[in-house]
Image (cartoon, rainbow, N blue to C red; front, side, top):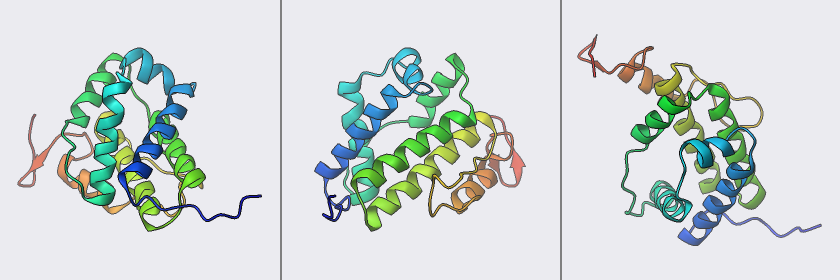
Length: 168
């Protein structure tokens, strides 16, 4: 048995490992793999550095991420409708990947951010609030981010400005 403590996500190398391990699991997953590789046709050599930059920005405050993830997810959703189960699986795999290799405040924060990202994307694309079971420890439902999304976009996913719903 290995009693060595798990490191926290404190540098870009650790974050790059997390991203590689997580998306290797995604690609092998029966539910998500076909969407990433078949529908989205992800160019992994370009996508993994972007995801590493995203998580390095979130966890370490490093600059470098540029992109419009909601737009890309919406395009995928138009080709292959995403369902809450897709986001649930994404979060569960993320949580498991973090827990398998890392422990500490940043690892915990990464799991919270992942749950928030999944909730936001699911709300915008499917109109449903996600609820997580025991596979997402420490995550409360609904959370403040979800409440802000509802206030910003309303239950239909349409932007709300000045107290009234507007068209996009």
